[in-house]
Each structure stands twice: as structure tokens, then as C-alpha cells.
Length: 141
Ligand SMILES: [Zn+2]
Image (cartoon, rainbow, N blue to C red; front, side, top):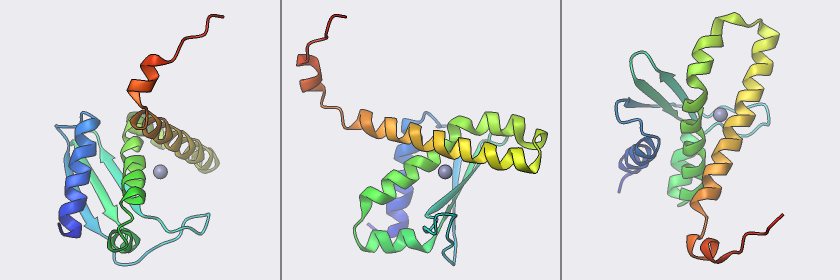
């Protein structure tokens, strides 16, 4: 499987899990890596258009290097994070031009934190071992 095939396959799988069948996904290859505030490379960037039902995913070169290193876990977890941004996108659409520059910076940080929190919850659910879960006794309070 080539890098592009892998990415499309993975994105369609996550899109399906998020019940986003009616959305169209487009990928754009970024030529140069960029660093975020933590001086870590940005892997993906997502732009969600809820009016035209389009999701644009920018892919930075670091992702291709991770694919070559078979670091599928990181690619999956980071792409899953991007899709979690969908959950806040209607709110973002609503608030977009109502905030000052300072408020927008605070807003973006809150959204980023909550998005990552949701991603962590989803990863937790994926790791639940249902067989053991059923056997656990529920403590009476
Ligand atoms: Zn994010």
C-alpha cells in the first residue's frame, strides 16, 4: 500500500466512524514542515466546511516520514485528533467573527485542549477490553 492509499484508507475509515458519509474529503500535500508553539512539527491541518460538506486535510512531510518509519500509531492518533475538530466546527462557525483577537487566541487554546481530550476519550474506548469489563463488579455506594 502506498502512502497516499494508506492515508485515504485511514481517513475514510475515521470519516465512517464519525458518521460523516455526506462529507467529501480532499487532501493537500504541504511541501514544507512547520513547527507549532511547542516547537513540534505540525502533522495535519483540517479545514471543515459545514455548508458545502467538505473536509480539507493538509498533510505535512513529517507524516510521510512517519509512514516510512512504520509509525502508524502516531499517524492514526494525530489524524483522529483532526477529525475530533469536526465536533467543535459548528460552534467555531458560529463564533468565528464575534471574538476579539485576544479572545480568539484563548478560544483556540480551549478548543485545542478539548479536542485532544475528546481524542483521548475515543482512544480509551477503543482500548476497552469488553470481556473483562463485563466481569467487573459494580461497587455499591
Ligand atoms: Zn488540533
